[in-house]
Length: 124
Image (cartoon, rainbow, N blue to C red; front, side):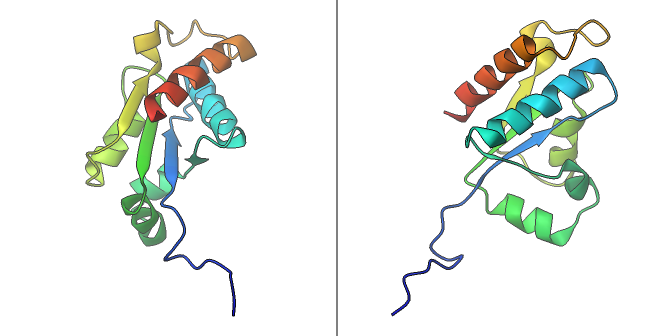
């Protein structure tokens, strides 16, 4: 008898979607999401796949237990991308809510750690 677990019995994923924009705050958001993934808090997932309506990415996102969206600036592109794809239930962290400003925020580890800690708090 096999004891391997199939997809029907595995836990639904916690997915993290991040702004990865060209601005400094986009880099901070991206690096915080990657850090959370390394720490096992969730899995960074493809925001471009959401925008492109890639069926496998949409289906995996629909099956997620939790979704966290991290936006770098006040344009909230990551949040809007998920909303445009029909997703409404997710936690959202805007770096501007933490006082970080586009064009004025170095992607330093101390700042990335701060963002990752706040994101982890939102994930519970």
